Every structure is written in structure tokens, then in C-alpha cells.
Length: 84
Length: 406
Figure 1 (cartoon, chains in turn cyan, orange):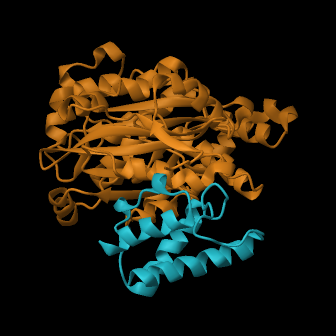
Figure 2 (cartoon, rainbow over the protein chains, first blue to last red; figure 1 turned 180 degrees about the vertical axis):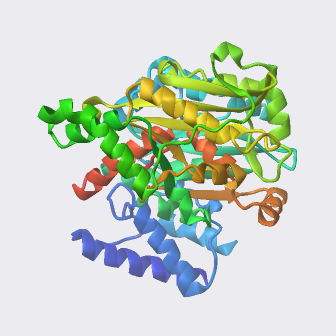
């Protein structure tokens, strides 16, 4: 199931890169917050997307955005949220 | 090692001038340092919670980088009572993040939702920008959509006409205000928005001073909290604190209703004057009535308040939508109903016992709504939402929860 989360995140962020017209390719070390790739509303959309696709419910209180710098961090946090 | 440029930390007293600058960017009301201290540092519920937990309880959080403060969320712990049991809640206020840093705004929301020692968190001023975040944190909205309504009574027909003429830039016609006042009054009566009737309840209404808030308020609170529902605490100490905002005290009024010299109800309201007459009114911040008292107490208090508004030369009195019997009594007083499209209420209850009590009893009684009004912030919120709406359309929107209690 965690790989499914990873796939959804990748797909979602790739779409965001296109929408925002960002030139740099998406890598695990891409900055998600400071680069503007993911604002709070996009984050809500992403979590909703994962919930819909996987049928799992996020325990959002476990999600700590202060621990997120890169795509890799984001995936790690989301895996935690959905693993519970 | 994390290298986030933006960090989250609890607010300190030294932050308030910078937070003030941030809030001023979107035209939010200015507080003095004493006003900040009053609202956040001296909040008796925050101080009490701090003593209970033995750890500092945040009065808010800021998002900060080397460039300064980019976001803020004020935190106001408040005690409630349900079935005579104390419940500790917290409401947030002045949630604002500069657009450039909005990606980090969820950090503020997380701090609010994960703070220690509270059994529930809520907001009475969620708006289009912040609603997704409340939903993300599994907060539930109020079932009753009418909570986004407020009630209006014209206090002075002449002031109302003059206000309308000024708004339309027709200042040359101001002398006609007095002449047209009886016409407006007749029209209002015809369409069902008459003035509050001068009823009697067998007692007296008196204007009180802060020093008059004594044991009678404790006695009234004891009676009120025994009623079903979730009640924002209103003991003597808390009423004294709420009625001592140094920035607005001069514009506030406290009216008490007495039957045989026993306090059976009171209201607190504030004259709300804005430059250029954009908003000029008296806003009801709170009203409490002994459930065993005459049903005319609430209308009598409001009638007296309309008289006070008229004396202040303010055109109307506005009240949030109260629930329960009190709400019914006010709605029977021929108010004009105003729709506040941009605010809604969200609540997340962490405590299972409280959750069950709320599910089995009145879902969300007036007291929680009053909770936001209490700090005199609701009147600010209405203005803030207008500013926010304009900002949104011009693509300058910050993420914010206007607020509140609060």
C-alpha cells in the first residue's frame, strides 16, 4: 500500500510541476514547500486524492509539515500518516 | 538535517509588534501592547491550563524566517461546561500567512490542533481559504447553517438614513435625515422590521461598570451552566477579564437585568465605529439570561441597548445568532436577518466523553458561538472578511481564519 502512496504523490507532483510551469525535473530531493510546489491547499488535495484512491483515512495529526523539505520527506510523512 | 527556511515557534510577547505589522498588511485591527497582553498573556483560561499542565501553553504561533515573521495564528484556550463538567477548548484567531509563504501555513494549523491539554478545538470564523484546512484536520462543521446569520435592529432612523447617505456620497442631503426618519420608521413597521418593543419584565435594567462584576455573576453562572448544552464559562473572574479589553473598554457597555435586585441577565456590547462610516453599529458581544427568568428579559436588555446605540448616534444594533430559548426570544423581536456568507464554524472534539455528550445533547448551543464573540473579535471578523474577500479577488489573499471568540 505504501508504494501506492508513493505513486500517487509522484503523479500528483508531476502534474503540479506541469501546471506551475516549473523547469526543474521532479526528483526525491526537490524542495516541495519552499519551491512553491505544494501549498497548503494542494496538500489538502493530495491527501484527499490518496484517501479516495486507497480507501484509507489519514491520521492527519501524525503529519508534521515541519519535517518536510523535499519530496522524499513528504512521502515519508504521508506513509506514516496512512500506515496508521 | 532539515534546512527549512521557515520555522514554526510559539509566539512570545516580543513578537506582538511584528505580528501587528503583519496583520496590518490586510487591514486587521490594531491592538496596543496592553491589548495583546490582555487577550493572550492574561487570558485566565490559558494561565489556569498552564498551571494544570505544568508546561507553557502557547498564546499562538508564528512562522518565521531570517526575513521576519510571515505567518501567525493566535491561540485562545477557553473553559466550557457541559453537564456541570469542565471542558477545556481552544479557539484560534487572526490566522494569517503571507502569500509567498502560504505553503507553510499548515504548520500553524497543526500546532493548533495538536496542542496539549485541550479536549476540543474550534473556530467560529472559518472562511473559504481556511475551510479545506479544517476539513483536513477532521473538524466538523456546524449542522445549522443559520449560524452564519446575524440579527439587526435599527436603533436610530435618522442615523441610519445619514449613514446610508454618507455611504452613497450624498452628504448634501444629510440635513434631510431628520425629516425622512419617520418615513423610514413607518416603512420598517410595514415590512415587519419594527423597533424592539418596550416590554416589561417586572425588574430593572441598569448600566454597570467593570467594578460591578461581582458575586452575582458567579450566582448567575451557576444557574446557567446547569442547563443542557456546552456553555462557555462565565464566572465572575472570566467576565471581569472579558470586560477589561484596554483597547475597546471605552466603547463597551455592560447592561444588567435585575429582578428584586437579583441579577437575572446581562449583555455586553461594543460601539463599533470605523473611519468613513464603513461600519458603524453596536455589536452584541455576549448575552446571558437566567433560564428561569421572564422571557421578556432578553428583549428588554436589547431594547435598552438600542437606546444606548441611539444615544451614541449609531444606526443599528447587531447580534450574532444565539441558539436555544434566548435565540427564540430575540428572533421574536422582529430583527432584520443578515447573511454572513463567508464565515462558518468548525469543531473537532478529541475527548470521547465530550463527543458523546455533544452527540446526545444540543449539538452546538449558543455558548460556543458566544465564545468567539467574547474577546470582541467577532466584530472585527466581519470587517476582516470583507477585506479578505477583496484581497482574494485581487490575488493577494493570505490564508487566514479571521476570527474570533473569538
